[in-house]
Amino acid sequence: MNARAPRHVFVYGTLRRGGRNDIARFRPEPFHVADAVIAGTLYDLGAYPGLVLSGRGRVVGEIYRIESEVEAALDVLEEVADDDSGEYIKRSVDVVAGAQRFECLVYEIHPARIGGRAVIGGGDWIAHAAATE
Image (cartoon, rainbow, N blue to C red; front, side):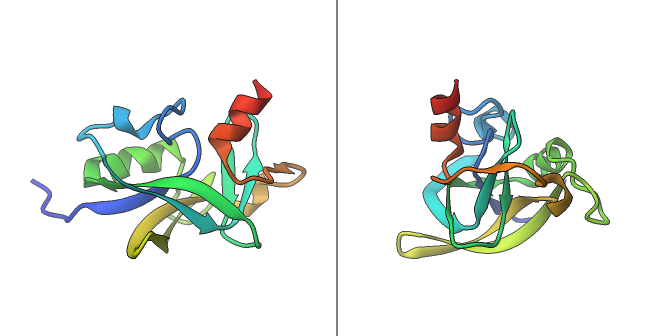
């Protein structure tokens, strides 16, 4: 049995509610804590977005409390590598939602993957994907 405490994750793309990889499909089921916005730049990678934690933009997302089994499944989905050479790099970021602050895992796209990709100006993948269908 894993005694590790639940963690929080900030999701901004296909893992958001209603997205193709909706986080609610994972088990044990993640608990929605809050909607939030973080600083960063969101890129359109075709079927999904990539977040870079820099720039003056804002990225829309959701915070979930997750168990270690879900974190492990997300690491596989996001192709995280121990040496940060994978498609995404797992970061720990403080995210403010209302009057609360959460330490969240955030999957940041590897910088090598964004060359020539368009920035999603509004920072909202779900709205962007709906507008481009």
